[in-house]
Structures are given as structure tokens and as C-alpha cells.
Image (cartoon, rainbow, N blue to C red; front, side):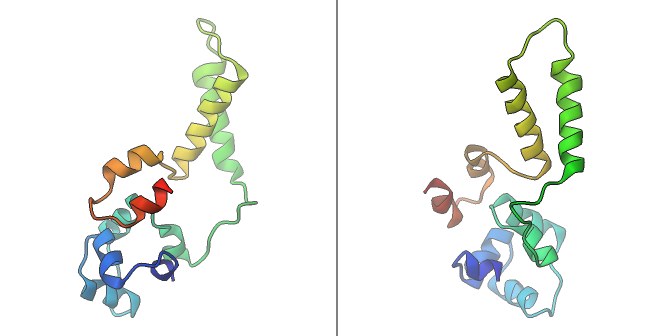
Length: 128
């Protein structure tokens, strides 16, 4: 379903995961299990691996309070309590957002491109 959502052939999707079209077909037909390296390669190429693994997409309304609490505590400890430097509320929020994004596997698009395979058809979709 994820491959079809991205409008990719088995060969193109397999290439994102570093496998052949045959290996991709074996994964999709349930005749073989994907490796962690395959899933990580897909993730680095912008594929929703959480959906592939769990079969569900997180709701945009869903908040992970543990992640938010830990991100808040990290920012509070690292920046807000410093007496030698002053930060604006906007700077603290930007740092908080960066920590939350990183904990959820979100990568800046400009960094994501550097880590993608050169023949990745999703690169154009990210730029759009």
C-alpha cells in the first residue's frame, strides 16, 4: 500500500530499500521478511516505515506526551535554566520543536536529500 501511495513500481521501491525487484515482490507477497537495513534505507528515503511495520498511520491529532515531556525537560535543563545566556521564548520553542522533530524521526529536507540515493524519485516530491 505504501509503494502504491507513492506511485512507485516494485523496482523503484526496491531500489529505495537497496533490494532487487524480486526481493521487493517477495516482501509484498509475504514470502520473505524485510531486513532492518531495508527498512532503514526506506526511512532515510522518506518512506513511512511506521505504516509498513504497523499498518497504521499516526493521527495528526495524536500527541505523544512522553516525547513532549522529555523534549520539554531537555530544553529546560539545557537552555532555560542557564544563567549565563538569555533566550527568547521563540528561540526556546524552536529548540523544543527541533528536539520533538528529531525524536519522531523527522529530518530537514535539505539534510534528507544528502542522505538519499541519487536515483530517488521521492526527491522531486520533497522539493515540490
